[in-house]
Amino acid sequence: MAGASPNIGSIYGIPIELHWTFILMMLLALVISVNLFIIFVLLFVCVFLHELAHSVTAIRNKISVKKIILYPLGGGSVIDMDDIPPKLEFRIAIAGPVSSFLLSFIFGALVIFIPAGTIKLFVQLLFVLNLLLAVFNILPWFPLDGGRVLRSYLEKKRDFMSATKLTVNISNAIIVLFIIGTLAFVAVENGYSLLYKEFIVLWDVFIAVFLYGGAKAELQNAYVREYTKDMKVGAAVSKNYAMLGGRPTLYDVYSAIIKSHKHIVLFKYGMKIYAVARMPQNMINNPKLENIDISRLSTQLEEFDYNEPIYKAYSKMQTDGIGIAAVMRRGRFVGILQMQHMESLISLHMMHSKGNSKKINN
Image 1: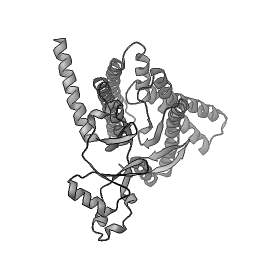
Image 2 (image 1 turned 30 degrees about the horizontal axis):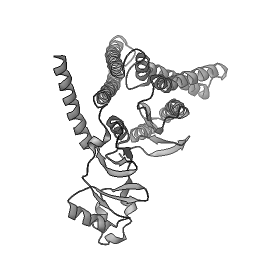
Image 3 (image 1 turned 90 degrees about the vertical axis):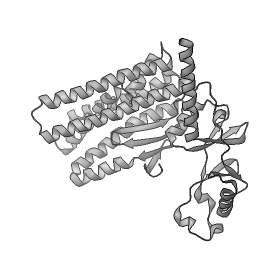
Image 4 (image 1 turned 120 degrees about the horizontal axis):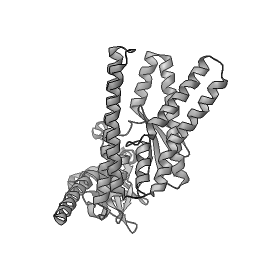
């Protein structure tokens, strides 16, 4: 989803993206009230520092961090978490809540020494926001930090799959208690209007649905990892593409599509493999196809090794929103991975594996 999360800079070499929904919320807040807008800006700072703590901890432990993305409900650090030891997952996960607790303590201490006024109100707000961020994230529910902390702890005596299942069950139980608590609060509390109570219920239900969906996705990924651990990337290699030599013109691309009847067109430039993206309508109508720079329409492909576990490639492509990738074997290009094809293959393999395990148990 290019463009859905504009890049607003980088730190420690990590790109920082602000999701369009966060931008929309900030603009709406500015229209409603300047103070509300300032609250969103402060929330942005708190969430950013929280996610930065995750990312810096990962980098110091030689774990790749692709980007930090900020949403209205929080943020996310896109970190390569495949096959890392439980102890390291624990350190990376706990770093965010610890940083928020620390910031909350600092702002709480500053409030004591700051005289009454606007500055003191904002410092108090920073204290509350960081405290809420820390508590909300430390609770043992997926996909937030507390869920990962709990799973990494459970992995001391369990395998990854059973630890994930137990964590998801605990997460779902907490979500149910969260909704029950919300309903009980609005039923007992008389200091708020009916409209405000309805807003609280709808907002908390929205959070609960988000958390439930995240927990379900974690369980699904655990199943993929468990049932495809014997599968390699090579099992999903596709030859459904046309390969052009050198740096082709747009007319070469057009000719390759017509002759090969394949919609994926690749070319090798230097040591990298590129795919020609779908062409915009204004370029299709351009009669001077030879004059169009092909680099404007091409994307360098992510590369995976032929013998790499398929769940690693699936996880990375899913996280990064990659639809197609190159497969290399001993440094040579041997084919492509297509997300849709790989998902179908993994689903069939999992059904076959589950069917065999039931037969053995019976």
